[in-house]
Length: 264
Image 1 (cartoon, rainbow, N blue to C red):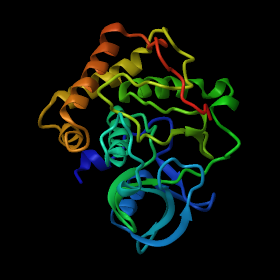
Image 2 (cartoon, rainbow, N blue to C red):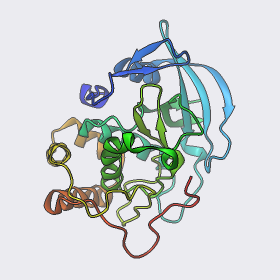
Image 3 (tube, rainbow, N blue to C red):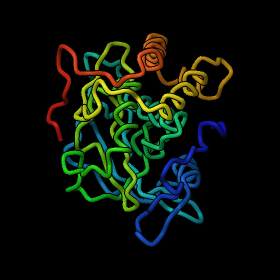
Image 4 (spheres, rainbow, N blue to C red):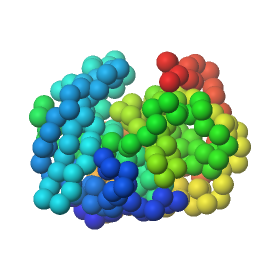
C-alpha cells in the first residue's frame, strides 16, 4: 500500500480514533496499519439487518487492537445493476476518495483476506445507535455539507439516515458505501438539505485537488482507483467531478427515485 493510500488528511477531527475503550485513542494511520496487517484475533458474529454477509471482528497486533466490520466478497448478494463481487472494492474506493478530498468521511477501510476470503475491513465507529441523520441538530450541518457533496461525487445509491454516525468527538462518519461509483446516475440519499445551493469555495478547492489526482495517470490515487472500479465507472466519476466544478452548486432531486428505502 502506498503512502498516499494509507496516510489521511485531517479535517476538524483530531486525527485520533476511539477504540473499544472511550479512554483510549489510536491514530488514524495506526488504525489503517492494524487493519491491513494485524491478526484477526476474535470473531464476534454477524451483524443483524445487513443485506450482505457482515461480521464484527477484532483485529490486533502486538501493541493495539481495534474492532472492525468485515464484508467478504463471497457474501455479497448479486445485484442486477452492479457487477458481482465488486461491493467491497467500492467500500475501499469510497475511503480512498474521502481521503483524497481530505474530508475523513469514511472510516479507515482496507481490502484484505479474512475468515471468509477477501473483503473490506472497516474500523468500527463507536456511536449512539439512537442518533442518526433524522435526529441531528444544526450543529452537524457544516459537516453535512461535505457528506452531501461526497455522496454526489461517489454516486451513492444508498445514503440512509442510519448510515450517518456521530462519534464521541462529534465527528460525522458515513458508512456502507458498497453501492457507489456506478456509471449510471444512482444518487439516492436522505441528505438533500443543500439542494441547489452554491458549494462553498473551500469544498470546491478540495474537489479541484481530487480532479487533479484522478486525471494524473501517475498519481497513487489514480493507480489505486483503476484497480477498484472499471473504466466506464471511472469516466462517469470524472464527469461528476467536472460537473460540480463547472456548476458550483449542489445537485437537486431529479426524475426517478431520489431517496433510499427504508430511509433509516
